[in-house]
Image 1 (cartoon, rainbow, N blue to C red):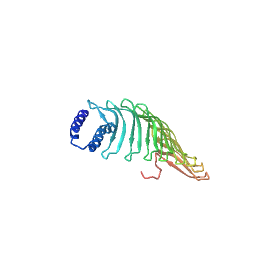
Image 2 (cartoon, helix red, strand yellow; image 1 turned 120 degrees about the vertical axis):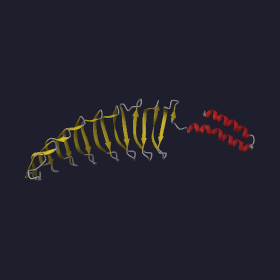
Image 3 (cartoon, rainbow, N blue to C red; image 1 turned 180 degrees about the vertical axis):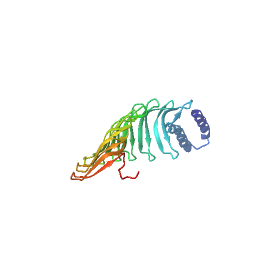
Image 4 (cartoon, rainbow, N blue to C red; image 1 turned 60 degrees about the vertical axis):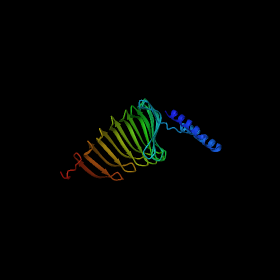
Length: 252
């Protein structure tokens, strides 16, 4: 349809050219004949077939003309690598598609400064395996593990200096197993155990020099039984007896 309209326009233009002086005629003809080539070169990639389905390369913009994403479609289904952008044009995320679905594919997201913010793998639209997260200086801040979207394994959080801050064990999307926290120099700060997201059994809290500061037990996330407190010399300074989170003199 565009070609037919352009050919009619060109024929009418040539008739009009007979009334224009030669020099102006030459310049005008060159400019107009070059226009369709420019238009085809600059043609927007977004294409919809006769059935209304997206086909080929696409670029989507918001109302302000800012690029949202680039990618390709086949019969209206995303295929291949899609790249998403922040409002200022910096890359936000990369996500590969296959037949319209994120099957098993590597994914990356980015900070506004262009540094990687996260990287990992999707399987059937769910996070799977190891995922890493970074700050805006691309320093590692955490490592997470998933099994088809469910939290699993030992999750780690890091201090800015790169030393380990916390280790939490997950199973079936819940905290289950050993839990540890560390001081910035790597010295142990807390140890405990989670069962179905609740602290259970003995927990120990340490002074920065590694000596025990507090020792006691939890039942369903509540302090229960004897809790013992120590000073930095290791001398016991206090004992307290808890019953499901309450001391004897606590108001009922």
